[in-house]
Length: 262
Image (cartoon, rainbow, N blue to C red; front, side, top):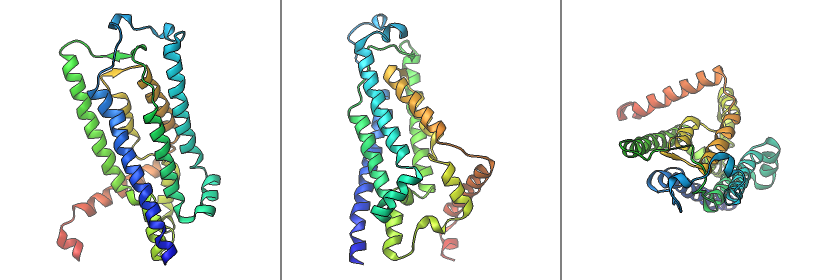
């Protein structure tokens, strides 16, 4: 039991790192573009067009750097999710396989956020500068971001957040209950094999619904949208099962306390 208990601090450390990274990701994707201002060294008319931007080293260099950071994150997130790598990690790290995956993903995302290079003088796809749009569009974006993040956190709780973070695997191992996935139905396993990200629509809203879509934000939104799209392969069977499970869990959450005691 003692060696098994040593796994708990490792799983908790991974969870804390992932939680902190999630909070930082909210700031990176929502608070900074919604509450911050694009620093401009020139007037709005001085911003370069899309064709001219391809020849400007001050724009190309940070864009290539940002692209490299995103590819690093996507590569890590995809490579470590393959069956070959998961089998290798399970062989050497055992029940900590999921916690290690979560920790590496958090570290890769930290690299993206900490070393991201803004492109303030690059071309802008859209921007709200005239009233009343300059007031109402950022407010509408803020409301949609708040709703999206609330939905994301709610969905993660419904989807067994402890298991997604690797905590449940260690807890089951310490108690000798085996692998949590082994207790799930074939329909649930089928869904999990097709669904990499249960909060795709909400993340797309956060990425695209901004009052100003600059060059680096466009790169972030495009690449992550492409990745989220390729990571999904749901069919009608998955959607029916997902809808049934969500309805069942919402029903359980809405039951009165005396009914739960029975």
